[in-house]
Length: 312
Image 1 (cartoon, rainbow, N blue to C red):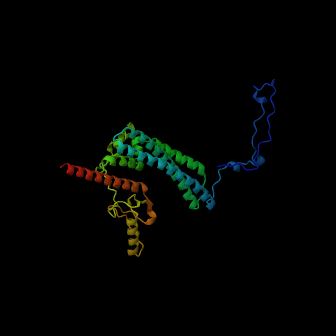
Image 2: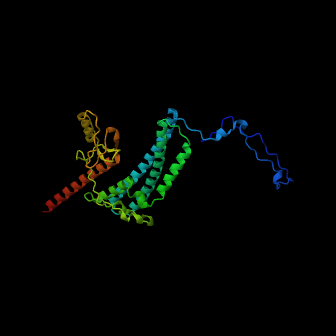
Image 3: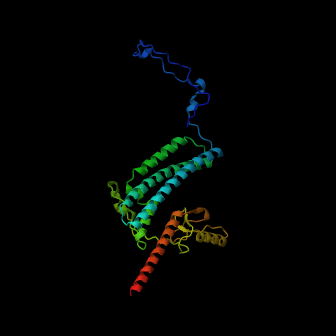
């Protein structure tokens, strides 16, 4: 971004006052527009050249601060999405199939769109920072950031509702929570069930969607309910932290060559280490809610059984 030098000031040229009776229709009588010479008062051609940002630690830290602010913004929007999800769950518990859920869904969708747009900026900015950290000077950084984010944002916003949300993790979580309120032991239908088909979706007819998704909320390694759920950033599979870290540590001890363990999920060959693990609070929250709901249903069934026995 071009920044004028401090010693740059206004041109000494001044327009002469125009007399009330002066004919200003004649272009030749107008004073010439001021222009800047090659080095007039500190202004030079070099002043207006977008100079590269050196790959210094100071610049990396400064840009990382902006990057972190984008991350904070994403977290704030994420909180709105989670609040909408929880509100929809409460509505379903109190009044199943209430149309108010559709209103909450619209709020959630708008928040998800905002999140994805900020996420685009976050990722592009992160790529630029990585180049600086790798020792590459940044040339045309502002223009590149604007161009890439604009193109990717327009691409995302041009999608239909079904294309945006059919595979969106936030929307899947939203619908999964609502479904489990009244269907805890039934698989959830495909997300497209709740997403209208538009003309641009006609090409999706050849896609095969797997319905009947049933979430067990059990760690695939310990086979017990999730405890401090974590997700592998390499493959997306989730585990209880203690179970997966125990596997990683035992594998490291048994392999002197420090061979990295593979994901224990059947059919997955991705490597997995502690560095690849990140907290999965959304899954843990869903698991906790599911267990609480199961406990509540069991207590209700027990009460009903007692009532029947007393009637007999």
